[in-house]
Picture 1 (cartoon, rainbow, N blue to C red):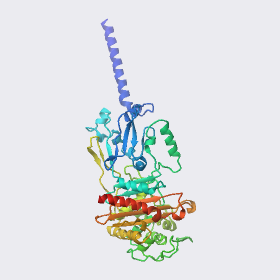
Picture 2 (cartoon, rainbow, N blue to C red):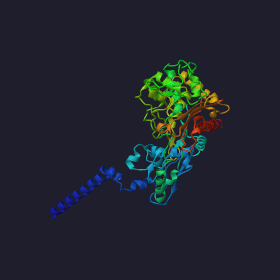
Picture 3 (cartoon, one colour):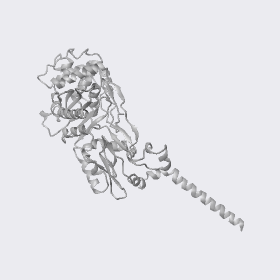
Length: 490
């Protein structure tokens, strides 16, 4: 009898060991695959079981959470959703996350290890902390001025602090309200279908994800290349440029937009002030392909790794061109493409004495109790040019605003430098041109420029004759710069 009891006990022990091994297999080795299984709703339910942390602008939340009482309990809400959508993106229970909501999802959802009371706590306990907050670098007055200035037209504005790279405004219009797609159900699905089918693409972030031909605003880059490569010794030196200018190797004659400008053999300073196509096309060819590529890349062109923290589309300056193509690229045409943020970086590098700071949108992240867990400090992106060259470019850009094509950007009592641009668009340039303006501003009592701005307006409903950087984009830039200067004074 004892023999049978021992056999039964051994068999039960074997079953117990098998049960424990199977449990370990499921809980340890298959945990990841089970977590990722589409039929497993536990991670989703857990994700929305607590309020999400907030995105802040100058300490005030522009997001929130609403208790729905459903299985996916807390739904994202937004304050001034269309105004801040290019920054926040959306956090949707159906469609996922974008922009800051995505880049800082670990902090906002409470899963980032930085929020844990001790290292690897979350990994051991599989716990989720209370969501932290993300403080942005935005300046509300600048954001509102940019949004109001665009007035719903297709376009974008990017404004940065040249000294540290903080993004002060990031606007794209037309915009949308992320709250419309935050939840589940028919309303969210209908809103998503409407937004994604809209030909005006309200969900496209034109400030960082759309590239445009920068037109004459790129002449600032070409001017920097000409000075740095000693193609011209000074802004006052004449450039020995004919008008019109025949593109090398072709019979195509390049002319200038303004009939009143005297661009033949113009100085570099006058050419920027009057926006002479002929001069800058000629200078680009004289600098040469390698010199132009090198200078453009110092400003940030062709960099696929810019993150603010969301990724920024790479601006483009071609590396394989003949001289005629190089001439056109040097005036911001041909294949040259840039985001508004990239062109704000161009203005910022000039304003900051030739040193370009890395643009960033997040100032710090904090835990739910307000403790700082991570900060973003200003760091140098590249030394684009010498301080001497930058100083000369500053004076040239000031002349553009005081007596050139950018007079609509003047701000009484402040030093403003700028550059207009009207970029050709469409097959055989038959589309409505894009209006550009890049600039920087410094208050009279300030020790350094406080803001650099880029504005692009692409309005298919506008009269072609009324499209110009000085007429359409410069007033928007002026409003944004004035908002920053007034806030600094306050």
